[in-house]
Image (cartoon, rainbow, N blue to C red):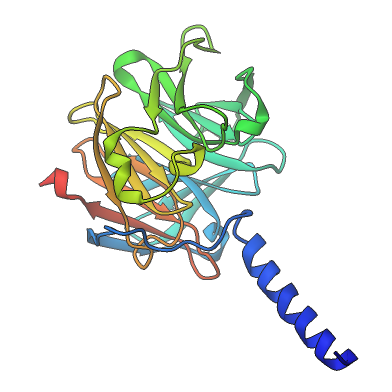
Length: 285
């Protein structure tokens, strides 16, 4: 083999490797068998500042609170004007993955499991408290939501291998501590996952966000690695698995509900602009 041929082969190998590892160490997303389109009722294309949007929380009919991957900023996005109305810095740069609102306070989750409590988050003078979950940072924390009925936050982790379940943890808002026993355990051998046609392991569901439906208490768990949406009832039993079309959900990282139970999902830009989608699922009809 001459030097030119060897260099060409090496170049092809490097390009393939770059594509492969640019997707968080896994192959690029592909639609699973059974992936279905869902009804998208409204789309908001986001400004470039929110290209890497990683979490959303409904404020009112005209506003969403958003965070993105790299900066400790709460972005107030106006859904009526399609503009960022306000930016609220609350700390140092880091990997911020989720946001939820509890009355006038905001909670932002960092991937290492640190929770930031921003009191009266819309005021000019902020008080910010930090809480450690006490759980291993390698779990890769990705989702947080307010469970009003139980006065707690639900915390979703992306990675935990070596077991047959994946936990959803609870952060008690009274004690400001994570409860020892998980709120829910997602069992990988549940028949609902058979449609995925893959090995039973911790990657069968890699949560990117979690939310509670205010209408019935169902828990919605979003997965961005291979887009899907798992629905549990309020006791933790699996009700439904929606396998999503990648053409509609390139990288779904955020999920929230309004008080009427309307569902919103945000997608990172994946090379383009991020978006927020108002979505109707089969179970909403």
